[in-house]
Length: 100
Ligand code: SF4
Image 1: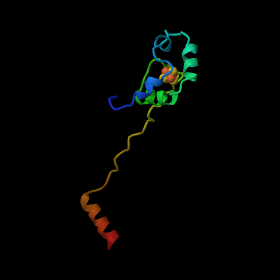
Image 2 (image 1 turned 30 degrees about the horizontal axis):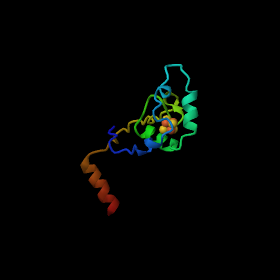
Image 3 (image 1 turned 90 degrees about the vertical axis):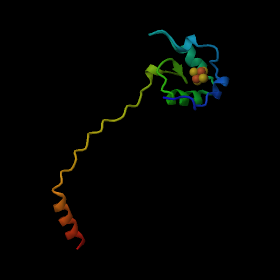
Image 4 (image 1 turned 180 degrees about the vertical axis):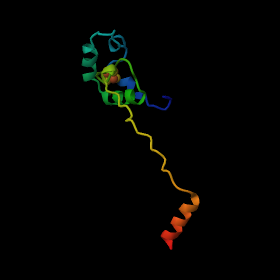
């Protein structure tokens, strides 16, 4: 995904500015401190939108450890079988009968 056109100006007001380590905990590490900061963050809604649009996969964003986030997957769509038609001549005959 090209993230060049996504607004990042809200990051200047982020409560986590300069505190990256606690937002990227080791596997099994706590996220409590990061989540507490997010709870007070004035731009958490923009942070959430940004993380969703940029499909962030790591770290705490808007109070969520992204590995916790249920990522919507496209539903399986069964391929549509092409309808088997008769001959084009038969179709034209049918069409002409319908309009006559
Ligand atoms: S919501 Fe949390 S991760 Fe997002 S900008 Fe604010 S403090 Fe940082």
